[in-house]
Length: 124
Image (cartoon, rainbow, N blue to C red):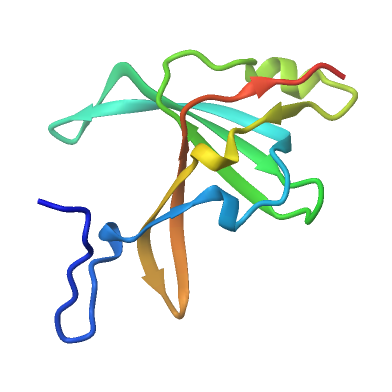
């Protein structure tokens, strides 16, 4: 099977449309607002197994918020360190490697997940 997106009656499945980060961001450095572990669910019940880490960020060029998800079990920084910081904390995101997938469309807006392979904590 190829990577061709199938269309029927001028409709495509939103899950089949995959975008890249370079179409949306001008920089690879983001201000980090928060970090959260995402736990695996088994049969609708939350387990103790961490599936991924979400990084809640602000684009310093546009001030737009964005959440990046990394399939790893350990964050590059803990939330309490972010909470205690007196200066902005920056992370570097490999935007060209970002995979953006649509998971919901409502009222003309698409909700997307932004998956990246890794983040790097930048030194101030």
